Length: 155
Ligand SMILES: CC(C)(COP(=O)(O)OP(=O)(O)OC[C@H]1O[C@@H](n2cnc3c(N)ncnc32)[C@H](O)[C@@H]1OP(=O)(O)O)[C@@H](O)C(=O)NCCC(=O)NCCS
Image 1: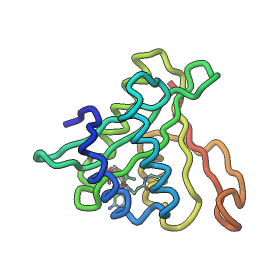
Image 2: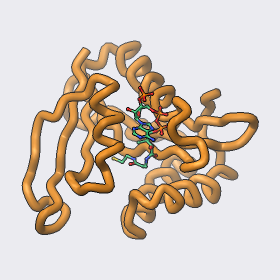
Image 3: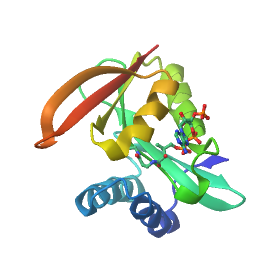
């Protein structure tokens, strides 16, 4: 089940972000700042969140939004699923929701960025299976030897 973000989800989502072991402390901080913007600024239109629940428990979330000053381009900024719920289709469900919303609004494409490092191999296969194509690589973007990969899905 997917639903809107609530203020009392924040602690649990922080726990999930840390538990994935996919993000540095600085990345978790940025992820939390974006979630707080969604809670504290109900009028803003830059970021949207869908929270996934399984058996009444928060299982993950996705944060996305229209890329400012572009026509019909959306960015998938963050996606995380509780390790206890990974591999059960929650991520796919969250991704499908984003794509459905983007299409409903006449969006042309979804972009997302990820790291070339080994630990993200599973994430890259997740995006590949969902039809995202690697369209750019900036070498050493995150740190020497850690490239920024941009994946795109066009509608
Ligand atoms: C990437 C992530 C969101 C995927 O969510 P998920 O709920 O585990 O994924 P799903 O169960 O929907 O699986 C969808 C596809 O992902 C891949 N996948 C899922 N579990 C996998 C596993 N154990 N091993 C390899 N691939 C796997 C498969 O391609 C799978 O397709 P399949 O069902 O045909 O096998 C989740 O693993 C996660 O939170 N990872 C850490 C955070 C992260 O890397 N976020 C993205 C930062 S850019």
